[in-house]
Length: 295
Image (cartoon, rainbow, N blue to C red; front, side, top):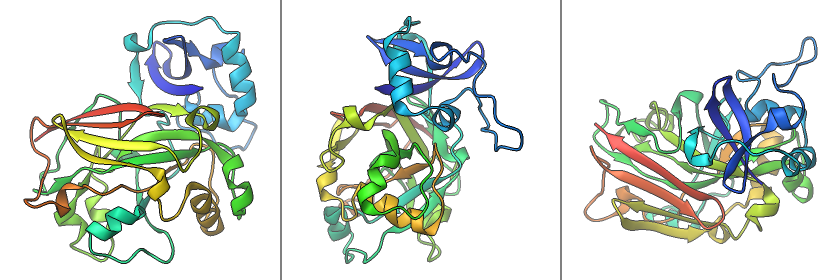
């Protein structure tokens, strides 16, 4: 399945793609107003979005509802949003492709290196992102991200993949001059729109093996990055297991797995994003994420 979030007349809605059209999943599941939380339960910011859907239903129930549903408007006719619009966490892994660590002149880490982004960083497919005035050196980073489907706390590697809802694309836009002002990378990672994400949340059965997902980035029609997740230092299952030992992962949490070689900051001459640029992150399994850049 390919799940998505979109803006409709009833606000943020969770949908699925069926023959090029959108199925409203809450209608298909017989809960048109979305999830009704139990008294005292945490409430998703968008209770008719994908996070709330994952909290309330498993993927098999969602798939069954999709198969028998009446398709609505064409995907091209709706306003797509990030697949999860209101995650509790956006966790990003650094230096996790062997070739990228090598091009940066750094030893592969002994344990996953990670940092956080926040909800203000999310940008929809096709969005225009305005570069931060505080930075002159903003870089691109094509990434495969995964989304948690069921709560994961201290899970083992062998069970880790059972907690996934699926995969999506993410562009970890990075203000390098801010990133390296301190030992912590977060200052260069959190500007508004610095995490374009989408277009879909592709479930594991459709995405295929987690170590064989392709990822590429074109900047103004020039191929800059091209790899696949077989080059990950820490694979998806290892990341779920490691992170879940440090914190509880909740449905809708986004974990971006790192970027392959070819980023602008390691090129000679350096390549920084500027006004009018277009970034296209693509994957044979996950689709195409287009982001336009403005200054």
